[in-house]
Image (cartoon, rainbow, N blue to C red; front, side, top):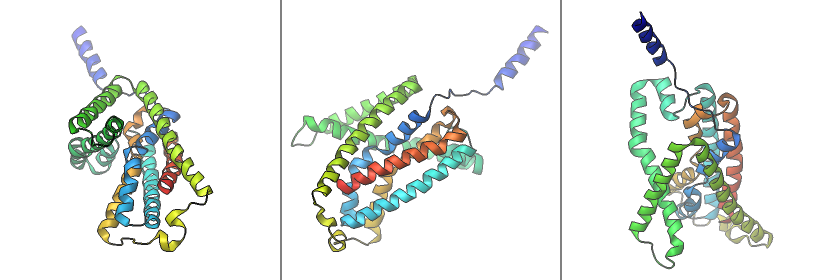
Length: 271
């Protein structure tokens, strides 16, 4: 009799769902999205956008289009996050809507291609900027750049594995540092405009001079701009760790997109 009772209790325990701790609040969620959006793309994309479209006026149009597209996509994702309250982002949405086979291909692609490539690009960008002051006037050794990139990936991965709250605290610190950096650039641009130095934006003729209207340059410029805004979808990967996700997901994205758009657009205008 005791054995059957033990088996029944084991079966009951197997059916219990494993729940994640809801430790991500408003500040942590905004810092998570903002820290990812204000990443390496914001500091690298402007030069490539301008090089592809050929004029400052056209580049500002590209940034406006990218901002609108990113905002609409983020709002759609916020709605999905309030309806499907499970962590996993794209994978869980495809799984619930289209089934297991399409979800498997999404997971396979993200695990082996999308995420590793994205993390590698961000880590290499960080390494290049971090080691540049130690090699003035020359290109840093490739081994040093790659070694620092690998170290950064390991540190971030281990921090996320050990403690969510500790990781969120680090995220807040780095987000504040990046916002301060963008503020310095934006304030410098405002001072320059106040002094009457408008440069090529003085009139529409000079602002749109040498604009490239071919499909390829515009496509590449849009790609660079959208990459700079990328990151709005990451909060849905931790939906089960949010406090009251059905109420706050939209507010998280709305607050973050508003201040990120403000800082990013100022940076694009004045960089």
